[in-house]
Length: 432
Image (cartoon, rainbow, N blue to C red; front, side):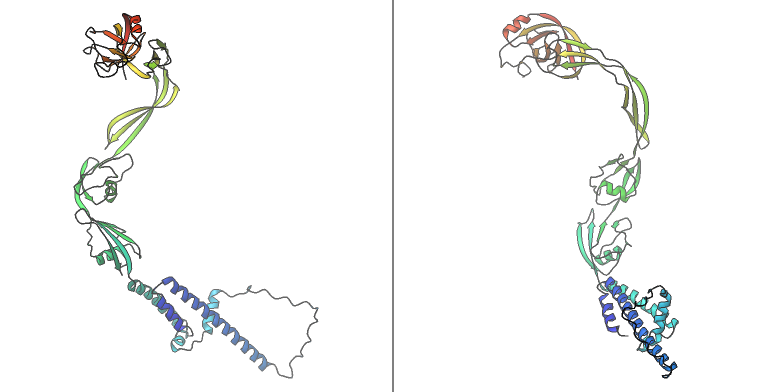
């Protein structure tokens, strides 16, 4: 065969790259088929001419026709490819026309049986060569090793093994039945791949309220749930947190959490609220009437390990939103805002005082408009008060004559304190 030497070169190149080898074989087969087809066509033409010369006597040869006039239209060329034989027929014709020069070639060209044997031998040669190339060419694989007791390390391993199990054996790393290996031991590897090994320790973990055998590996709590085939979702509780790294002595706790919801339509009574309103003049009291409402509420019950732990209530939709009954307390001079509750009210015996711009009260804070002196045994320092006719007053001072329900209110000036004099007014003790 004319292409033996080049084909052998291609088989050698197969050791470096399998795809190039198979492409070369296919190309050579195509070239050989084209060569055989060309030679067969030429031989058939020669044989046909020889037959015509033998069957037609020279004296009976038909006269040579004169050439057609120059303006005569050429005969139509019959379309090609319409009667092209099938692939099997073409292969059989090429096989019959194959006339190799070597003894081996003539043996395989003798009949179909020998040709089939040759094809099988070629297939075995290709397969064996491919497997031989895999064995002869080592693969460069990275091995990452993690352990609670040993030092973590990264190894670059050159191995002829094709699986993680073989690579680890070449690297001298023994893997236990409960250790983590990725990819799996029987997965086929290629150069550049990375094998990760995490040595496990046997311990106990609380899984849905039960103590179970658990294998800890270096990594996060979430990694260990996956490794131990514990299903979980975003609502479940894990201690330590799912993203926190575990240690060899970590006692992992996993609690399954799920919810049930129920919707109810309910009436809602108007509430009474106290609002500090800087749009009202300090000390003025006003009320805003509200009304009841109705809405659709969602009740959400939480279950931990199958046991109900609490129910929350949330409005989903208002049919008629309620409006609270508001007690609005004016704070224009101090600017206080917010919503409060009235813990108690009382009739205060009020006086007024002023001791300059830099005076400080017994509680340590500066005395300004909006502060007052109290009997700390009755009203603790820091208590927020609202005094009708005055406004907000924070308890931050005391006095020898301030006893019981007496309040001494700080004014802007001495004249203003004289104008206030002594008054009995309603006072509100406010809390958040």
